[in-house]
Image 1 (cartoon, rainbow, N blue to C red):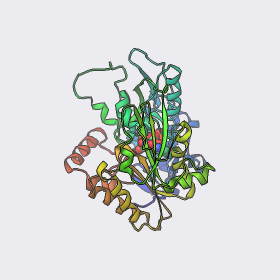
Image 2: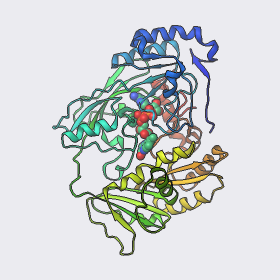
Image 3: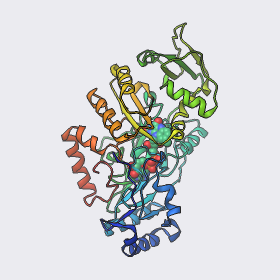
Length: 448
Ligand SMILES: Cc1cc2nc3c(=O)[nH]c(=O)nc-3n(C[C@H](O)[C@H](O)[C@H](O)COP(=O)(O)OP(=O)(O)OC[C@H]3O[C@@H](n4cnc5c(N)ncnc54)[C@H](O)[C@@H]3O)c2cc1C
């Protein structure tokens, strides 16, 4: 997969050099300005810069304009204008996605949903809350906490990642093992479709059986089927009271799986390379004595039957070692980031083979252990495309999944089409054709 550095703009469906795109774009940009107010349409390169570069720096694109609607009606107007002009658009939330899906790679219109940040009152009856697309996870969690409740999905990117972005990627995070992924939290959605029409299931009851819930197709659709403007989300009871956080050193991940038991909330792992890098980058103390291939972090309300000889520490602040990894690796250089999963009986085999691959870069392994999830990061590889192909090929050969929680984006479109069951690809194609026949919604994702 190539890093895409585009200086072109796509206007009216044609790819044209930016220098020649001025006049056709003028009508489009003028119309967008009328729809949302000229101040909310950014066309200057320095104003667009933060929106067209991804969090890792691996993907840098170009947008015809960055548009920032402030209401659902404005989103509808923007989508209609783009549809009529045949101008593709890319929805964006916090821009923390790691597969290049939130970046306009070919001069699309970038539609930022961050201004849709209304957060409704907590409904204690249904234990739910309606949140605008642009509300950050951190704000949503704080809002729930004020009412003695919790929002189950949590990511280290919580202060930037948005409600709609996490729904569009079906984000996972540390608490999937106990609370489920984002899909499990979504009770209703409000979405602007490619023709500008609005569909909503926000006012649904907690349990209904009224036919297919087609709007749920939006979960995990990465901005290719509609623009999510709002969601009703399930809240849960926090279990902070007798919480225990333990870090254990070990030489196989399979040993780590034995720490799963009643009361488990999260079980994460990282390898020695991650720990050493975090200690250096953050200036932290070594958390446990000894030197191990892997470190497993467990959050539980139950009792952990730890072997007397195991090196373990009990301390809530241990999360800092796990949560600093992504940022630390980014500081070492532009990483190749792959988020994959393999069957649990193959986790150690996978880790050993990945390490032995000739990537000529430094390999870091960490992830969510209970799901066999690996974030494979390679820094300094002279040929990241080849490394990516080899690692994804290994995942497929082991019966794993090429995307565990970050999605397909533009990084894995090719592999997705080559390795997914043909019937499922055909179904996805028909859904795309039905909902977005002119392919204006995030056209680079899935379909390339
Ligand atoms: C430090 C760090 C830690 C992370 N940890 C995790 C983790 O543990 N688990 C995990 O799953 N992910 C993790 N991520 C990845 C990322 O945070 C998630 O993918 C998150 O869900 C992206 O949310 P966002 O608002 O930033 O979306 P963006 O990056 O803006 O967009 C992501 C995708 O969603 C689409 N999208 C955004 N908004 C809308 C909308 N309103 N309507 C339709 N489509 C939309 C975009 O087009 C794009 O395809 C991490 C990232 C970082 C930087």
